Length: 174
Image 1: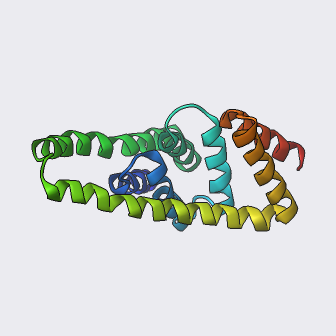
Image 2: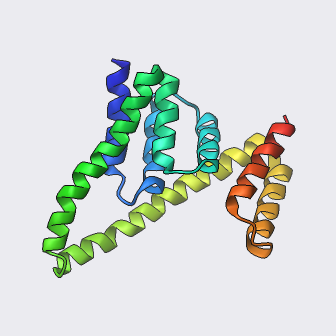
Image 3: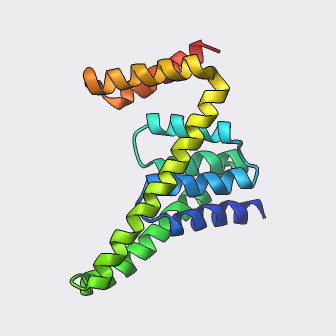
């Protein structure tokens, strides 16, 4: 039963996640935390680790959470469930959208999805900031935020180095 739950959780999150990996992360978070597989804090830590690695974030999260809950088979099922909806829908919908690409309804439909994705990402960002604020305190929160901003915007340091630095800082700060 655990394997079916793993498959279904990631399949549903990814079949509804229009816009790629970042749009599916809040849906995955809802499934994983609601089912009790990870806490909000554990999910945020897994997300941070996943963002520090190369490749699509949704498949990395699926592989990790699937392995956490069901071992190697759970990992395989979670990754497959993450990729399958996109593949099926892409082949089906792209044919339809291409056929009717000049239709005003199709143009309107794609425009109306964007605000929904923005809200989902905003809620996830708020939850992440909220958890960080209360977990590490306002001093650490502001320090990391300001340093990250300066390094990315003023020094033009690649975000991967900033994530790695934050991971190292967090590891040494325990």
